[in-house]
Figure 1 (cartoon, rainbow, N blue to C red):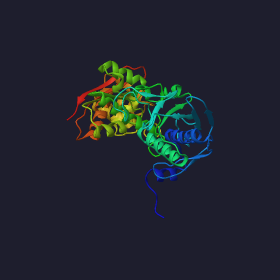
Figure 2: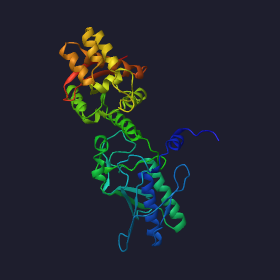
Figure 3: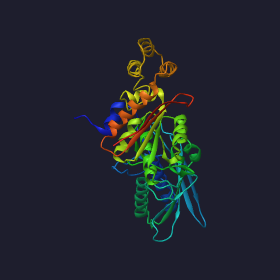
Amino acid sequence: MGEVGGRAGQLRSSGLRHGWTTGACATAATKAAYQALLTGAFPDPVVITLPKGQRPGFALAAEELSGGPGRRATAGVVKDAGDDPDVTHGALVRSTVRAGEPGAGVVFRAGPGVGTVTKAGLPLPVGEPAINPVPRQMIRDAVAEVAAECGGSGDVVVEVSIDHGEELARSTWNPRLGILGGLSVLGTTGIVVPYSCSAWIDSIRRGVDVARAAGRTHVAGCTGSTSEKVAAAVHGLPEDALLDMGDFAGAVLKYLKRHPVPRLTVAGGFAKLSKLAAGHLDLHSARSRVDQGYLAGLARTGGADEELTAAVAAANTGLEAIQLCRAAGVPLGDLVAEAARATALGVLVGSPVAVDVICIDRAGTVVGRAQPLGP
């Protein structure tokens, strides 16, 4: 049998355990709740159909059926994200289903812990619950399946909630993206494949989308909160123009190449941006390192004598290298910024994006600048 590629191949080769998206959990909870609403009994486990045809079963962690006027049913599923470092792993995803207006189909509501969209640029209109399009379709399909089997109309109001979701959302990009009040219900396949960086990279892409939809012509990719504050202060950028790129400079550059914004500021700590200057697009310490020999070569081009060049080459950290050069009047920070800009422009080639770079030290002091340059 040939080697399997793509997401399945990576999962198989990694030995990591897959999990289920919040969308899959919400679908299972909705299907169980609607069946209980029609029949008086909750299926447990409840089996759903995922977009690619898989039919997993989910155990219920919560069941509630209320009679009388406004009759409704609630079911809950605990999210298992497998081996993915997902903030929502272990969260209880609930769905409450009640009868809707005849002919209305499935109407979605955001319950406690599920956010509401307040900014353009996301795949949902402003004012809608943050239940993404694929999970919505999965839920509609599950409702239709139950309606056909149990004699329902399929006209229901589905309220999805996530226990402690508003608190968990503070650890996500949702507030920056204008999703307020809680988490998003996500998933395109229903299955979480463990990628250490996939959620962050996806959030970078959504950040660019939101900035573009808001008409921003200048965004900043920042390695951390300190560089973000500096970029905002230097350029007067609003919050939705700030991209928390972390170590994933390549993700910002590659997405902007396909979805350009006229101006990009890259802002970060001197050591991380020295890696970008040397051609690395992943700035994580496990995947790239500060090359003191490279910095020594740059220092030499900036006027460092042999003694200083040797000292830079022997420096323990990038911070030590920049301090040595600043004391000697050698503009190593500017040279790193210019080289980082060149790397960025190399990725963006052919795309109408001008780039400037700001290097800072740990205290947030600017130690290097490269002015805007582009096509």
